[in-house]
Image (cartoon, rainbow, N blue to C red; front, side):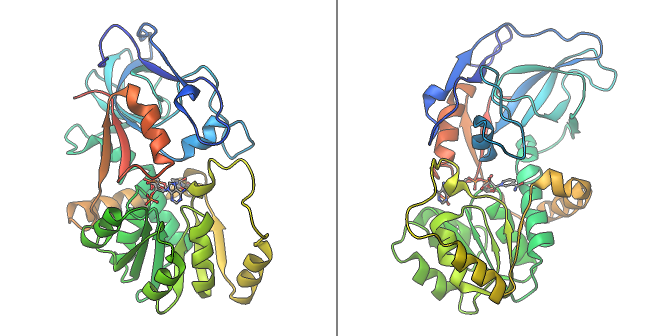
Length: 344
Ligand SMILES: NC(=O)c1ccc[n+]([C@@H]2O[C@H](COP(=O)([O-])OP(=O)(O)OC[C@H]3O[C@@H](n4cnc5c(N)ncnc54)[C@H](OP(=O)(O)O)[C@@H]3O)[C@@H](O)[C@H]2O)c1
């Protein structure tokens, strides 16, 4: 069913997954569209962002953010249009960045809304290169990773929302950039379209040997997006004083137990000590929210100058959000995953 003006399609979190999420963890509800009262706006979703952190919200394990509530719409950032306004600061038709979740319509009193330029060529970029993922790449690389010209930067999930921007900023800073991605096609894109120096498919049986060959001077910055076997291949190649911004560990998000095999913590600790490696986890808005204006300025300029390319993977219709999200955790997306909820 397409978005309409009588029902509010909502994708609810029906149950908490154990291991990989399935379609049964979600349910479709279709209540009536709410009505804006004094001081409120009614928002109509045009784009919904799908992001790896949502797997964490589906769980009630202790984390840096509260879990999504059962039988409520799944949480998520959206680009919306104001469908009706009883709020002095908003008019019908305005574009806003919001956090209204997996549904067609939601009410807001204006808290947390960001007005978007009505003439944006790509309003959905507010969920990607000009939004949270782009900001994550920018701060994680430039502040925590602190790359210097001539150094080697490695990033996995290299064609994704964060990784693709990390690699391109590192190129702008004069680094050698090696990507790691999940298919030959993604690797080709990282080199030919994003300008990386090399890219390796993490499904290759000789991942470690290929990575070593692509990094003849070792690795100075490893931007960690995935963990697991990719990190195992990276660890021996880290140079003295390497920086490792720990942004995400997507290969572990569906795990229900620690990985098989020997405990590698002693090897990690010995490497951190002997090579004096700076390894830093960060949560983008908690740690860097105050620096958002710097990012908006720099990224806006780079995009205008054509220095950053950004690929979106657009999925049509809200009902397809669960399957698309399940695919994100399996590497099925190619670029920033966005659901086009309405055809504005
Ligand atoms: N710390 C923060 O504040 C923050 C903010 C935003 C994002 N993040 C993290 O940044 C990372 C990238 O996020 P994103 O939004 O840019 O997602 P994305 O890269 O657009 O999509 C996820 C990608 O992860 C890779 N992947 C999925 N399962 C994998 C597995 N088992 N092993 C290896 N790779 C796997 C796949 O790429 P391939 O097919 O290429 O492997 C998939 O396309 C995630 O870990 C996310 O949690 C952190």
